[in-house]
Length: 331
Ligand code: ADP
Ligand code: GN1
Ligand code: MG
Image (cartoon, rainbow, N blue to C red):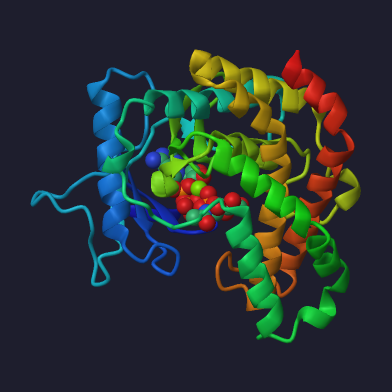
């Protein structure tokens, strides 16, 4: 087979293996992030079985076992094989309202289809994954230890983050009031596969963090990764902003996919959730910058700081427009 790198994920190493007509996705799981790859496989198999068994139209990329029924390979038991979704492509930036609507509907339909799967059947992959209070604590620890002597290089970003401590508590309180549901927990725009001309979505992928959570963060991640005309790595901060028309399309698509499943409290959490996820993602990048780029990696020394600035700018843009955006929700 020929093996080539695939996609732009931050966490795993993903490859496309091609042999004539046959294509497979081969992925090396990042065991720094996911200490127990077996749990990822068990959760994914459970989810695939539930979707198939319930006749859901939502498609995911299935994990494929070898002839002995094993899902994990290699000396580190960290290599897996996934079904390749033919004719698919992922996008890194939303270009149109239609793309926004389709992606949001796909992620919402995914959660809706899992509403009747017993949450106890899925293992917790990373505890407190979307807890703003836990993320803030990690940030404070990184700040305190300053193990790479980088604190002195990012004073303004640290001050920006510290000023939002009170807001973190309010977001945590809101999140704690919401129902726990099985969520995707990484509803980034490149985790949904479109067909080649972008006219429909084919599958939801990257199920590694799928576990009980809150819809406010699923919708928030969609907004975070899709609402800006610039990607999260962009340093062109003047162009980083929330596009209200894309926000509206994400909202409409999400509501369409959730149908009547969304409670009133959940609906009211969508905008705060979007702001929270942008800010917390900035905080996560800043924390990783302070810790030495051990989680997200970096292609140059200040990349995680640049990503943090980008996400803080996006948060500020959402905050500035929050009253107009709230009107779209109450519409
Ligand atoms: P990571 O956890 O590192 O983000 P992903 O599972 O999201 O890894 O895969 C990274 C990228 O690889 C995706 O954004 C997509 O472009 C591509 N990809 C992953 N799985 C498939 C698949 N089954 N079919 C087609 N493309 C895929
Ligand atoms: C990671 O795996 P990927 O690239 O889809 C991260 C998300 C972040 C995102 C930021 C397990 O997602 O939580 O929001 O990067 N995944 C994990 O781009 O931490
Ligand atoms: Mg991914």
